[in-house]
Image: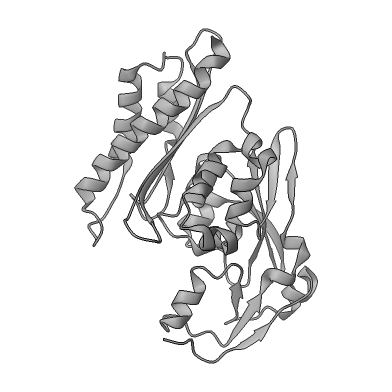
Length: 287
């Protein structure tokens, strides 16, 4: 099928974008989700606004504690840049799993978050790391946790994601990312689990984060439950307990790709793998 007729503009900067952006307009970033929807006529926008001419939506700043990524940062850039892999390796690993080469080359970090698919890899890692989104609209700006945006189904009307801010992983922080994906060229994820683990000098757990996609209406994290799991040694039994807690928190549905019961089992299995990977990467720091 072909898309319906629509108007098209490509503003040269953020100011003109915000002045031009009106109700009913649809933003075009990488287009990897939007273009199929247009072709299948599931979306019928009167006008597309192409963001790719807005320089303020690009760029990457890597500081000693935080990383700021422009909304138009391509998935493949997250994979290819050595400084990003060193600063946020779990995000780079997740980006490697996104679709295939064509999708990674065009798809953007901001577009993935705005699309708010509950199984997408990169929003899940943003939830893991408690990342924030910088947003602008014709009436002002705000900063919101990516978790909140995803739970709300994406940005508000006439809001544009400008950048994503996330913490840089500490040198001694272990991490893991595991995914079960559908077969086929697009390899869209069924469930993903990501985790970070920081150990104290005595080898006990000093910091723990974990997040799951594809097993609830939006990605979810271990959250406050992590506090009860600190100060213990990261034994196999401890990893099993964390994995079980993540699986219990899941709220999956039956669909064409997996039953709810199967998704819960996969959450537990992938969580165990991701936590083993995180432990392996964290242990050398306290050896």
